[in-house]
Amino acid sequence: MFQETDFLATFRRDQRHAVFWFSRYKFVAKMLVGHKRVLEVGCGNGFAGAIVGQAVKLLVQTDINPMRDSPAERWNPIEGKYRKGRFTAAYALDVLEHVEARDEDDFIEGICASLEPAGTFIVGMPSLESQAYASEESRSEHRNCKTEQGLRELMQRHFGCVYLFGMNDEVVHTGFHAMCHYRIALCNTPRGTGARPRG
Figure 1 (cartoon, rainbow, N blue to C red):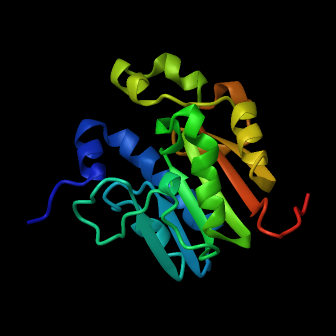
Figure 2 (tube, rainbow, N blue to C red):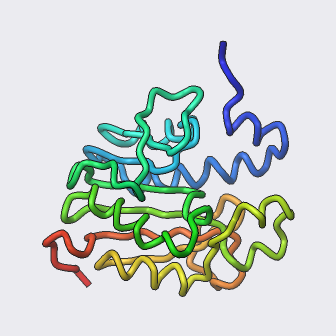
Figure 3 (spheres, one colour):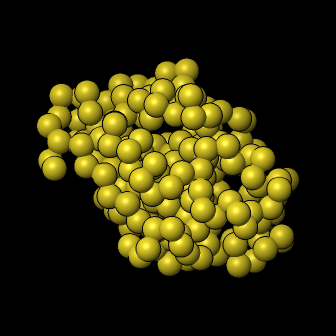
């Protein structure tokens, strides 16, 4: 029996938000076209990852909680359950804001260790500025939202190249950072892997 996915639950609650959610995965898919081995960290039940799966050779979806509809393997980067240098790219959408600030470097380091020396990582999360308009329930779950500079500094500690984008609704842009509802960082060349930063 097919169980209701995260997307269907979101669609029933707010049809427009479901479109925004899918747009984030489309952006990732466009950035990672042709990658050989891609890791999704924090995939939930894996439903939206199908958009990325169409663009890459192999997609491994992972989550610390059991998934209802997906055969994906479980993986917790904080516990270090990854294979070193296994993936050409990784991404985590709507995950980092749930990671406590004290654990964020360990979280990112685990992902870096799973990447090849020239690997790519994409992270997306609600902006800190957006939380003024979020529901009380959402704010209670989003413990680690960041400003543009905060996200840049975190990612630059772990990657040689970091590029920041903003997102409002389904539109990805490079506009005024304080008015972005959502942030995306596109990162390349994990530090500490033997690869030299390009920038």
